[in-house]
Length: 308
Image (cartoon, rainbow, N blue to C red; front, side, top):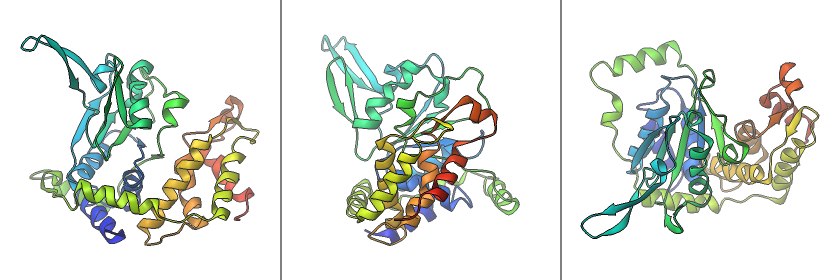
């Protein structure tokens, strides 16, 4: 198993998600690091298809949760149900017991229900009534939210949003790409024809290889300097935590592996930093009014902090 297998995986997903190679690679980074991805984009951009195609490509199980205000924590995790046959309460697994979990419009459900994902995403297990159940391996959450429609939504608390390795978007296709997309769906959706290109065991092997990618002390210092700078900015109310430093390190290792290297270079960090940090930075209201954005903060930090 190596980076050539990654390119087979990316090419397989691109049979459905046309012309979005970099976005697909970002999703694969999540898979390789056991990380979770937040996709923020308008409806109809292929967010669900992206997650479904990934699951099909790795021979994995796919479950989808549509987040709504009346969704309960047990609708995600599952719970104990009385069995008349045995006279006992048996645990009925919820949709979180899968390999690729899509939580659609995650900000449309209440904070109480959102919090049901915290343990799943951090510790890869579920605890119900004092009993703990391990999630399948690999396990990855792909959550989506609409960047425009905020009526009837509940903003993700910092503790929840910090669990996401990266925040990405898909973006509109080009003219040529959109023509290809609609022509390929004239008879049936291309996702129906997607075949696996690797097994779940292959994914676990790739994850182990990514862990062996080397990160020098200089690159680690560079990562920490970048992240700690978000805590000192005048326009930032809350900077990124050490979890962000860990996320950048892991994502950089995965990107280096995809690029065919067994070591991380500063360019890997620079490329991934905006996607890892932008959802973790909370700006002062005055800064937001003046047009400042988390992306601009990250851009400024990259200019200020020299490469080690």
